Image (cartoon, rainbow, N blue to C red; front, side, top):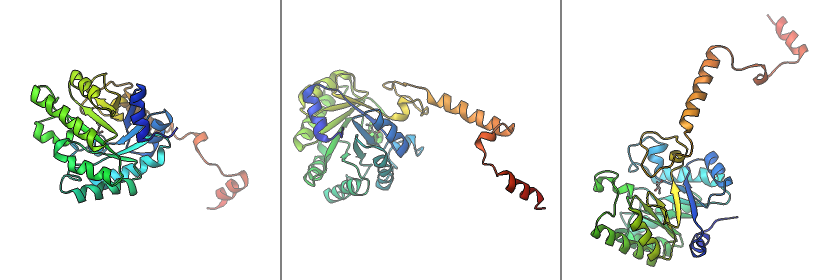
Length: 278
Ligand code: KIV
């Protein structure tokens, strides 16, 4: 079944939890989609888990478009959300619409995600007016890492909590179809979830959100540079992968790979002709 932004909004009314994961390439998107996920985010976490940057700030519009196209080719049913990278929606309303439009036209995404509340609300409204669905993102928004002084949990005091609730309401009024809540206390996420009519998708925001999202590399235990407290590693695939690489290296060194079953063979007549060649 095709998942749409309407499906997301209806799921909240039905009290049905939504599931999202990140993907950046065709094969992983195909697997995630076949497993029955509701939404795939081509996150700017790409910068860290795929491109090896320290944070998300270097990711470009071209990077996200390139990877979103690959994901769109792999996913049949999931709603595909492309992350708007740092400075792709901050400079002007025009710039924000143009870049969001590229995510849809060139990246083949169904929707875009923007970090922030009041400060960017004019851009959110304009993108939605241009008929592009928007997902909001509040809390520990990674593009603000230098303002926060690191990846620090947000919404821990009264003024931060009030701002988060105000921002969530503003995003809802602007017409977003969902809001990611990242790195905030579960009580605050619960309050926001009760306050807004659109679904909240949590990451490090506790169990009361309307849905959850994780970075796929974290869930699979593929990215070990940093494992946040909120991550549940469902597998430790980096261990299996390392073993497979070591076995391959050892097999090749010992002449145990490739074997006959991995080789192409000549027929007898051509083999005899080959032997007589020199
Ligand atoms: O870039 C990303 O993967 C994200 C999620 C963590 C929500 O923004």
